[in-house]
Amino acid sequence: MNARHLRQVDIVRAAQASGVKLGKSHISQYVSGKTTPRADTLRFLADTLQVDEQWLLGHDRGRPGMPAQPKRVPDNPGGRAATPRSADAPRTPSSQAPAPQTTSPSHEPEGTPMRHFNKSTKLDNVLYDVRGPVVDEAARMEQSGMHVLKLNIGNPAPFGFRTPDEVVYDMSRQLSDTEGYSASKGLFSARKAIMQYAQLKNLPNVGIEDIYTGNGVSELINLSLSALLDNGDEVLVPSPDYPLWTACVNLAGGTAVHYVCDEESEWYPDIDDMRSKITDRTVAIVLINPNNPTGALYPKEVLQQIVDLAREHQLMIFSDEIYDRLVMDGLQHVSIASMAPDLFCVTFSGLSKSHMIAGYRIGWMVLSGNKSIAKDYVEGINMLTNMRICSNVPAQSIVQTALGGHQSVNDYIVPGGRLYEQREYIYNALNSIPGVTAVKPKAAFYIFPKLDVKKFNITDDEQFALDLLHDKRILITRGGGFNWHEPDHFRIVYLPRIEVLKDATEKLTDFLSCYRQ
Image (cartoon, rainbow, N blue to C red):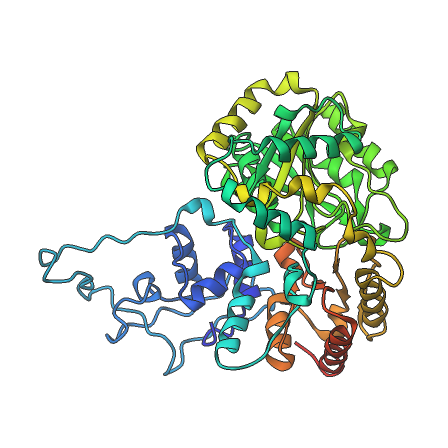
């Protein structure tokens, strides 16, 4: 890449022009040697970089070869023609050279190629940059003795948020009773408490058999999409999104079609854009409310438009509501399923965020509405639920305790509470930095600021994240990690105390004062 004067973004754009699905995170993983491109991607990379495929895979590194003919990279956005290889640039193995020996002579007959095992092609379009290449670089820096401030992941415990004492006590008392499997859907006591919570949220037509516990909401997202999608089915997913949704749609064989959330309108979904992307292959709409990564909270008027659209096109609704108890400014969260008794809805929530127990891994999903149109799908959900036996039983044992009685999270989200005051600080601090703007989040503990890409000459948001990490030892998640397709955003987790956020924003201000990509 250096010899060809190419950046990651140049290769991504050339891939788009050639109809090859390739992202910057894929290239980072290839460069680091963590994954190997599949055959068609390998051919594209070899052609673009003007090297032999076998050389690109690391074979015959010591053997001199014939350089490829210089040629122009397709649709190179900078308009730069690829230059001939310099003396110290990679050389291409000669096409006349014998095939490389890749076998161990003690185990394989001479000349027999060794079998290689590649990752499934189903993973080609799966990215999870919340824990991706930039995080790997941060881990390497920590291993060398550097301290890194991690503002990349919503994990309350490291920042001093404690699980309510009553929850910890009740789990310890019940451990000896939770050594065996539970029913596949979960403990009766847990599901009963979740059912009652769903009824308080006005979810229609919900019984105890409609409640499923999981090892966090993440497991249930994967399970619910795997039970639904056939190859080619389309699901509308927000952009920006929590990337697990896009990943799980793709893993299940479907296609994630991203509808835009509008930053100019409090990050609410663009209903016209959503409507324009519905086809005869669309089966469902995904809603993340409250939203991660923007912190947006959708009002009833917006939810009603989405219900009307789903009703018109006979679509399912998946609603990720894991942050529904982390709503500020006196606002109220409304579950979209409560407005759609005639539709089939799957609603997700859990205790990881509201009760600061992310490590316990306890979430749930609730089936509601018109279940008569989803009998076969529910059978598929039950099949997959049975196959994983059950979710974490000790964590299930405290659901009833957690959902009943005093909700300590309420103390955090009012004026004077930690989350509220940290939200206020980070919002004002970011907007005071020249070239940075941010919409004020209404819920959760994330903010998704925008960078002036012209001011900072930013064309690669992953490079921005790496530069900030190396220079200031602050770890953030780039906007592209949330399937946002412009290099102009990043997410900050504002869980640290204000003095830590103050230090971080001062460093960010200093970094941006002279940063040009």
